[in-house]
Image (cartoon, rainbow, N blue to C red; front, side):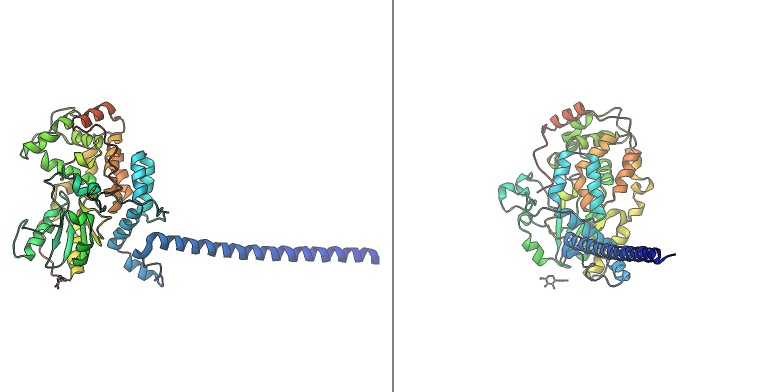
Length: 406
Ligand SMILES: *[C@@H]1O[C@H](CO)[C@@H](O)[C@H](O)[C@H]1NC(C)=O
């Protein structure tokens, strides 16, 4: 090797070394940037999370150990977070329901159920009848005069509790009567219609806000069993019979004046709350969950565990529970059993008509999927009959009432 050649080689080597060094440096830099990006992304996510969950979720701030999270993330705190997240997105829910696209609705339901971040437009919030200060817009104004408020104020424990019909309310009614040394339904003080316009009075005197509810698939089944049995009030049945009859395919089962599938078809065809009897009006309608600050949401499905929690929160001795939900006839068969002969399109429509109740009170999208999977996917919905059914309720156009975004 002559000098020239060796100089060339060492030059090449130096170049190669430099190249390698640069490559290494570049890789390190990239790695750092990646790390930084990751950090940025994470902190952004945190921000979004805490923004979306707001004050209700203190978990983020106290994230010291996983234990803390688990302890705080009990069923009730999760239900409450879901409700608050849902209430922040009522306008979006209204738009989705108006559009009526089942897949989109289910996706949104999943997002709320999983407490996913959702951007809500602060300029586009719902007010509507129940929260409105204007009497003409207030829900009370739209009510028929016989309307009963189903929110009770219990002045021994200072609990305000919403008990919509057909959600296993007997337990609570009996418990509240027991506080007064009585049994049965007792006479319970109710909130006034004016409390729907202005909740401040109710808020100032209440120690704990409770809302008891039930999954809508079971609730409408229970309403049918109770109100369309042959022994139930005929005058009530007469208000709905014609509209339900449109869908009857065979005689009603023994002991009933209408069949359950026909009743569900009627409910699916009539989305307006104002065509419904209070026994199957939405819990959303009865309780105004985005107006009163409910803290504890109890489900009939888990009432044996949920009921004691109410009294624990109140620091009051638990009254005896009258009926055990486990003994209810509904428990012997899954609700999906009763929906097996009903068109899947109709079951989807029923879901949409009770959408707020499914989403806001923390019922799982899987439950919805299960009932729809069990229903009859070969039977299309009959749009003409649906129209007839609405006409027979003297309410052909039910699109204008804007009933979620109160
Ligand atoms: C309920 O409220 C009243 C009036 O504010 C109060 O005097 C009473 O101590 C409260 N009871 C409970 C159990 O908090």
